[in-house]
Amino acid sequence: MTSYTDLKYISKISSRLEQFKQKNNLFNFRCPHCGDSKKSKTKARAYLYVKKNDFFFKCHNCGMGQNLLNFLKFVDPKVYEEYLLDRYKDSRPATPKPKFDFKPVKFLNTTILDDITKVCDLNDTHTAKQYCVERKIPKKYLDKLYFCDKFTEFVNKVKKGTFATAREHPRLIIPFFDMSGKMIAFQGRALGNENPKYLTIKVDPDAKKIFGLERINLQDHIYITEGPIDSLFIDNCIAAGGADLLFDKVPSKQVTYIFDNEPRNLEIINRMSKVIEQDYNIVIWSDEVKEKDVNEMIMNGLSQDELIKIIEENTYSKLSALTKLTYWRKR
Image 1 (cartoon, rainbow, N blue to C red):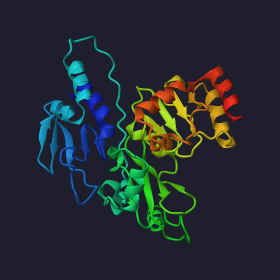
Image 2: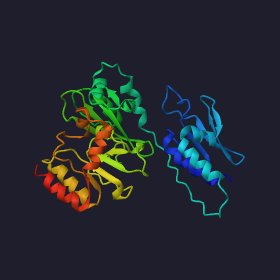
Image 3: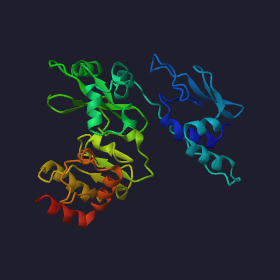
Image 4: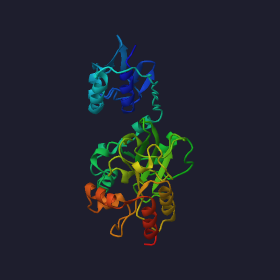
């Protein structure tokens, strides 16, 4: 019989393994060592399998093989340390073994990104690359953003009939993934004078348009901005993607909303009021902050540490938030 502890820790790392699927006690995914096939993003030739009641890893692309212990160490050293403590601590009274709900990632749509180019692979003089540099987007995220030369054609390939007639134009593509790594939507940011400036296309019609879910840790404090780009400057931050979002996966006291600095925008005021009513923390900018949003603050020379300090100094909740909002909206 396979170990309850082994299954528990395979479950913990499953969201980090691309195209993760389960069939009984056999797990299949793309190899984190070699990256699997360079020609096809749909091929997954790495496995975790049982041999004599123990799990082993094997990749049929690069040939790498190792036991579960070493595999966990490679994928996530922190999880590896937790596994060691859990697996080898002194025996304890038996407890009911829960059934782990491995949710196979349906990578039906991520292959569409193969047809467009990562920003990190663009020439430094390229319009999309220059846009990201001017916005001071951290380099570590440039391989998560894409450039699409023919946006209308790209969208119609993903969702047929979205645009009946539209002038072709390029856009920066910002993919949205859920917590398991499944692509659920993408946002196209105009690089010219096209309107609207932002267009968000849902790949999964049932999913909420939330950016950054695959990056957050639910055990830590979570920040929520309005725009995806703003969220890239704050650790453990997601973006509402233009949606009216109340994030209910963690207690409200563990969440801080950061709205744009637009006190005359009635839509933003209404969203802020709703957030306060639900007992979430909220940032209400002081008079000294003149910039419209987080990204503009960074572009004007603020460091990320300075940004976090300002956020902490301007965070309110409950009655103090209502009082501050009443004053702020009159600016």
